[in-house]
Image (cartoon, rainbow, N blue to C red; front, side, top):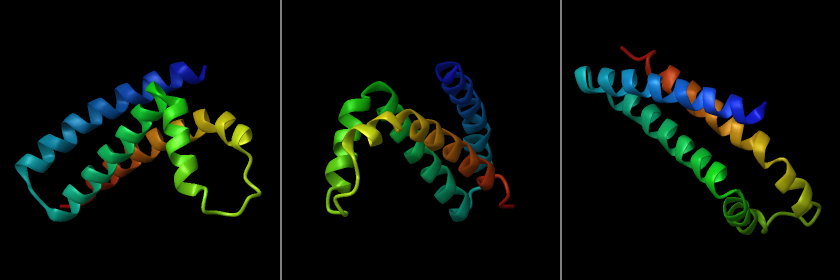
Length: 102
């Protein structure tokens, strides 16, 4: 179920990104560029988490290892798929926000 949701949301992102880039080319605004760039950054993080989940989580774990010790590695890794879908939804929302600028 989650894999089908990821594929569907990825297709939606690609379709919306085509319109966002076309809109950005026709009417350039710095604010619009910022949200499109943030959306693509979030999408690249989603792809990295989808293609290489263990490597992505290890990288994130090393970055957040400076936090308190009450985080459990295995519990965090088991929640990675939900976070991956969250990154994808965030990138779609950021593209949607980029359309609000005129």
